[in-house]
Image (cartoon, rainbow, N blue to C red; front, top):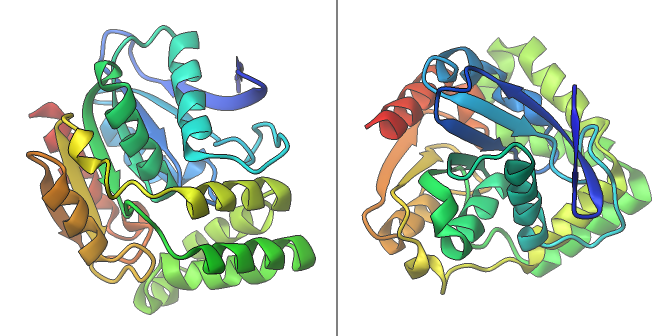
Length: 259
């Protein structure tokens, strides 16, 4: 699979679909690689040319020295879009990816057609929480953090019924580079967009998981209330609602982007 040189990093990406269709960029959660979007791809390719990449510090992309910022990661998206000559595109980001979407919509609105913000918040967690996680990862590696993340990412019922899917996602978490993960944790720690949401004028869809303990439905409602004209949908899942309630997630996103 190809790599693109963006700023000071090599970004690993996959571009699929017909060049005549409108581009859709997908952006991942912390600790995931672009395979997290596999459930959506067959349906999305009916309507869009789909670009997904491993965020800096993750997957096969470069692990450059941290800490990173959300702005820096969002500019990686722009550099990738420029490299592929995408003047305008739809953007769908989940969790950390959603924060990249907020930054893009507020700072480069001329590049976006429509925006989907899933399982995300204008501010996630507290600085103390992120500092503790960074320290844990640096000291102990990814195993304990991965086990805890899986409990936030999926409901107990889903974990019980879909052991192979959960095991696959857990393995991706466990093999994420600890320094890349920690560098992105710092970006999440330092990002607070609550006062800037009113700058966003891009048509937006907010998606929350009813059972998400990390970015709660209240977080999603806050975004919907403060982004002009935004729509809000709640799905039957925890944090990775695109996997847990995959069919409805795909339907809602595709209907919104095609409307």
